[in-house]
Length: 418
Image (cartoon, rainbow, N blue to C red):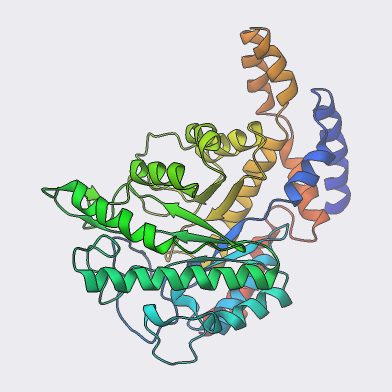
């Protein structure tokens, strides 16, 4: 029996098993196919970007590892992204940082970027059916320091305000060009190694900066504001904390970004989803895997990711929760890191879509808590993997571990020669 017939046979058995607990497998597959993850361009080159600068990565973030073959220019990065897309099922987006513009070797400072610097990205995206999202870039710049939008120095603060305004305008043009809103994420590293005398001072400045940045309304982009627990070298105080952005988001009807690496390790990100959905229009997720700190390890299929995915589906919020990836691992094959993380995220979402929710909800509403717990446990061993294999086969991408060989071949033929 060949692999294709084995996959089909296993899938038919899985359909019967799931039907017995009231789950329509084909409906779950249709829902999964409609979920577009926003892939992060910076995994391909360790957050280097294409500015005409050779500075080190700064701003409280860090990439570890020096595995050979990282993308060195815009053409290599695009080639890598297309290779990644060929190995994962579904149609996905690409999230760009402002430092990834097509600058043609010219020096363009952050407060000078224009939509024209991303026009070739828009055209490339349309050609390859990849919609774009965007991020302002406050780190790795001579004016970054420890403070940007919350800097008491008005000239530096205005520099970053202008940069972020321009990023919003670029996002607007991207959204208009692709006929779909561009998600524009704002994250800054602003903080302090020690606790400042006045926490309020810097948060007041940040609020003023955001008010000015968001003064212009746009129709083709959506603003997302992202908190962080701490940055490397800025451990004691973060201006843009979760509490700050939650308050700002609720008051100003902005999307709050939940980065799964930006909270205490014991904190449940899944538990935040239902609360945020009641008070903010939508949610943006940056899926990462912290190990003792915001170390941005490659996403794997673990309990945290499963819990988060189930909460989104249980809240019937797939149309209000945007899912992006945000990790950078330079210790292993970067294409492999992409594919492992993307497929893990999709597997978690599939398991969430296959959960026998109707039966569980019925047990819960009638206080039959033993039955609820028992079914939850039994559902863990239902043959979701057979459904996943069928999803891959339907989308003409490698089934099971077959993608490993494809990535090794790409390394041998392409990235090892860089």
